[in-house]
Image (cartoon, rainbow, N blue to C red; front, side, top):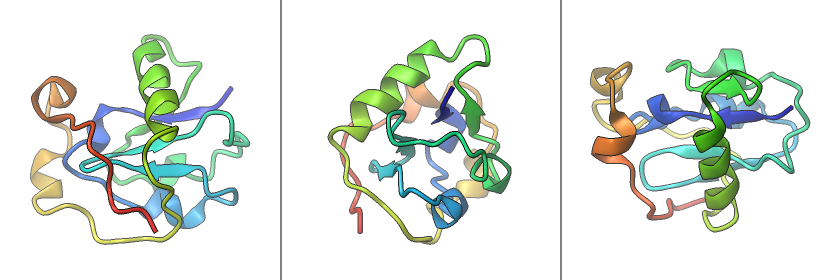
Length: 112
């Protein structure tokens, strides 16, 4: 099992999870984060830290596409290891349906 970031992170990009990760397995895109599944040690400390409830165990049903997204983009996006401010209007976008189809960007973030 590993933890993965799902679409509710998009347009929010809270980094509370990054701050508590003991193995620095988060990678930053322009408008969301992903977890590198091969680096995640399945400790689970990140899951309760996410204000948007966007981190889930990959064993939950229906998350295969997000496992692939996390795997693929963790290979190309830069590593992020410290907390930053969320994106502008993060609270407004938290919980919006269909965020992946509407807003997902393949562009990398800044990283460390």
